[in-house]
Length: 190
Image 1 (cartoon, helix red, strand yellow):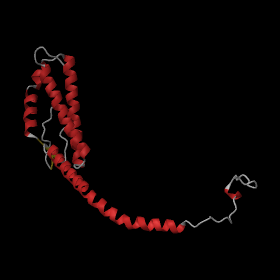
Image 2 (cartoon, helix red, strand yellow):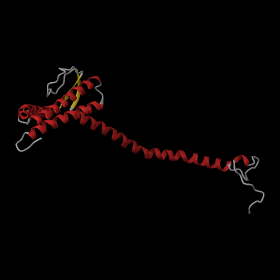
Image 3 (cartoon, one colour):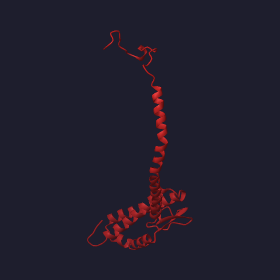
Image 4 (cartoon, helix red, strand yellow):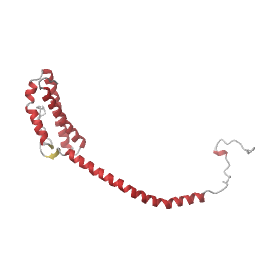
């Protein structure tokens, strides 16, 4: 049944502050909070036991990540005080730049690069002039990038981004040298 003397409430100010609730809810709320607090330490201990394998898995993943990083980085290592381990491919106008850190390059890379560089000039001479210009410009750009990266790494040898860029530049150089080798084979072109 609706009250006939009830008026429409438009804001909280319209309510009377002297109306008391029909019963006190605080004793029930307090009892629930105490019951949950008594159960919480048990569930936290159980969660800690369940979280232990997850922590071990996370630690194992970190160890595996470090091992993988060491394995990947084993081919190019900084050695302070030495010059560049890779011989320049194209003569640069800057001359011999002093680099505070050098990188020992994998011997397999050095052998493969030396074989490709040894036959490079003869293969460039056999190319059409336009292709030769493009290839020489590309190789000069790669060599300049290597020099710049080696100088930057000399200033900040622990910079992982510079290390990755240097490795990528070595790979680009090998790709370009291999392409020149394959392009000069009869029946193939650039």
